[in-house]
Image (cartoon, rainbow, N blue to C red):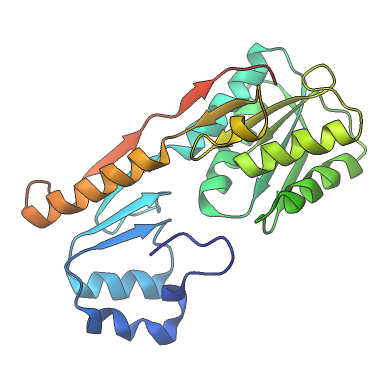
Length: 236
């Protein structure tokens, strides 16, 4: 079930769920949390190993390999506090993994006494222009901020690009911290400070866990949490 930024996954269509049983899968890999009750029930009815990845549901159906997205947000807030940024903002997209990063960031900024001046949630981000629109929405709040946490590589790259278009210097006028799923953000924007994960390794470990569940080498309920990697560069 691939993660699809453009549209809801096909298996979230209730009319297609009966086809799951017809496929007779030996196991299932779910990208994103199994929070849809109908999809969850359909997978449970298959009585096969299920591994969730990318973002963890509140009650995983079986096993999971994920990154602690909320901890990534908390690390972002701690980094800003360590750099003595006082007025901070967050730009995110409305999906489960970025929502967790955003919530971790918001809760920790408050606990550390930072002032969060803006919280921009862009409904759908597929292209650089969508990210630029999110940054423009942040500027339109007319608030003063000295650092922004972007919960995806695309949002971070767009924020730096649009800041440069408006003669804002990074990090002198504005610090930008991004989260990268695949390491591509620093290639788009040289010197970008990032939190991140190795998406390929996440997939490999999820695939291996699925095989181990099929072979009976790992029990149901196995949880693997991968570390968030912090790369300090020039943008903060």
